[in-house]
Length: 416
Image (cartoon, rainbow, N blue to C red; front, side, top):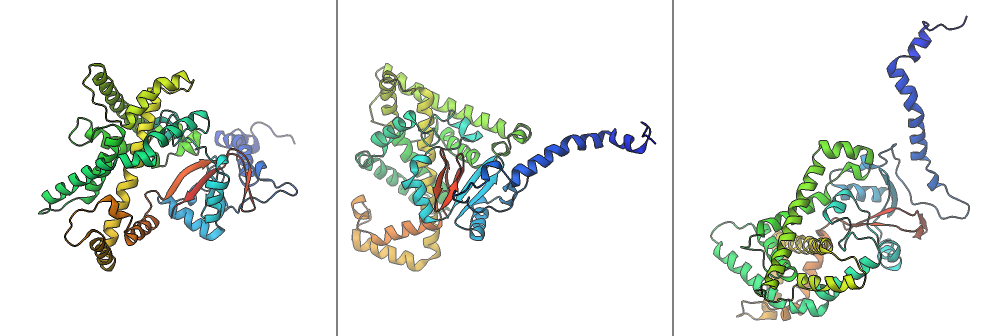
């Protein structure tokens, strides 16, 4: 007997939830197949194998295996599966590296294949769509900017020329500590202010303290660092980004931080140009001076080097030079307090090198302090400023330690 429209089977099929399930079921099956058996992961005859991979879920891949402390989760996965593992973090195939030989292969032997950085939402917006150095795509622009930074900021000659700046800022810090010795002192803020003022004098030409942009510069560094390190689901699952980015407020905070930092840097550059125009500017050979001078030259050579590029590079310098300096100093003090014997040995080395009656350590003394160098290296080993080195992006398929690494893989190198 044929089924009528009133039969239970037809009624069930026409029920809206059942119809929706029937429509999305093929999509779910395809997602499962492509997640567990992706076409790009098929091994051809004679090709090296892919690195080992933990089991993954559809769509999210291995994201569920990462905790709020991702470097610890990645370390645990590496201990379980090996020094090279291939994860799927949403849409990103991701190579997690914890082997010194593999790190050397990636950062030295085959570094030309790993020079690109994957641009995530925060870095894309905050650094003017990759107009800085750290997140700029590999190419002519990146080479020119890197050469400029090395030549006018990071060369041995330039670093030596900042000796007076370092001496004056350390002296100012010691005076501040001396004035507050009767009360508790927040050494985190003291070290952060020291590194911020040194970088500010080198990059902009003036210390941040007691200037109209002191608070704004501090917010620029802190909030930009927080946003670039925050997990944003849209970076891994774009479809969910448009939902959670708005609902969670990530995109609103990102726009707010970018606008405030852009206005701050724009005003600093405007003030610098105004001083030059009215003749009140005193040249201090800061990095900003060099960038503004080079702007016209770069334009003549056909390199797109506008104000957005200058602001992005200045942001780079503050982000890389502030916390990377203050965090190790803070941990060094904490570890020495925890290990009195090491502190006593270091103190004795300082007395032997500088002299029992001297109260000032000069830079020329530092090269003679072998135990101090060992303390610094151990602090950096135990407490690196960043637990995961800046992400890299593979531009061509290659082989690392006998494993085939597909093109487009994101690379995470653990510093711990």
